[in-house]
Length: 183
Image (cartoon, rainbow, N blue to C red; front, side):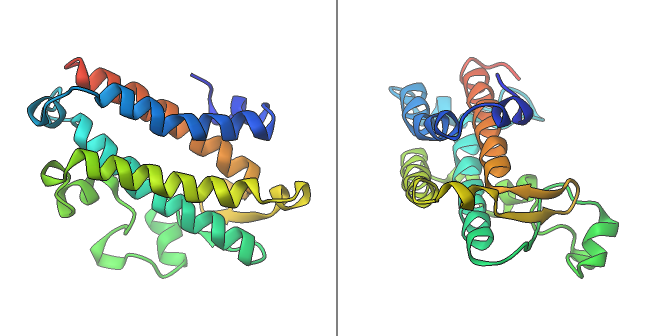
């Protein structure tokens, strides 16, 4: 499973190929599974397959917004998962209510286990197709457009796509483990 850094070493088309393959891979992994199988958590600390699909759907929307923001604006600040309290405070985000991009909180607030897995996967696939239309429309120079990541500094669109490809790999492996009942 390549890291984001390893994906950065691959041609853009290879990264886009990975993004394109993910919905197909997920659909194949879920094929024939019952709702009970999809809703079973491997342990108290890890998500069920259904929750992983819902997470991917929601994160895809977040990446879609990020990509459009970086294309539309010059060097925007990009809110990220796991930002420190100090970084959030400097940007006047969160305060006493906490970080707005908290996947664990999303799973509870959005009741992932009550979601229909097929509908969540279809929404993910639709958003991913929309993201790919945008990314495939970029000129070579536009791939160097960037935004400021709270923890890592400036990241280009090419860097963000590498991160998303690695994110896909990570959660595809997590999904396979969840379906096997392993953490």
